[in-house]
Amino acid sequence: MNKTKSNKFYIITLILITALMLMMAINWKQPINFALKSQEYNSTKNSDAPYKINVYYFPSKKRAATALTYYFTQQGYLIEMLPAAELDGLNVFRYSSNRIFFNHDDFATAMEIKEVTQRILGYPLNAYRFKVTQATHSMMIVFTEG
Figure (cartoon, one colour):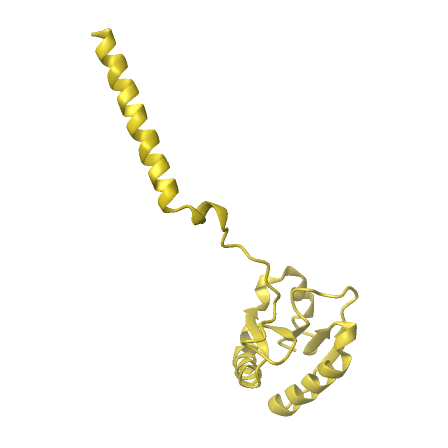
């Protein structure tokens, strides 16, 4: 009886190893080719503009943020609209003036975007340079309740 259990164990182990090898042979490229690839934030297929703009808004300015997001999307910019509550540091700006933050190298483009934004929305936008160059986005616009 002990020999029968031993034989069953070897047979089951052999079947499992064979099934595992068969599955690996069928899906050979899956374990080797990982789906993670390094990507830049800008895709030339999606946009001619080499900038990503994050638009943060407080609840009273959601409509303005939506309008601006729509406009810049139509112009081919990569733009993302996010509630200001997602960044803790933005609460200090809640009742101040609207702001645009930009990388030092993007000064000319930031001023163009600032002027267009002021023209579209009809109220001023103060411009500030990031102290440290941002890699995940080129510009950040904050619509405040002030």
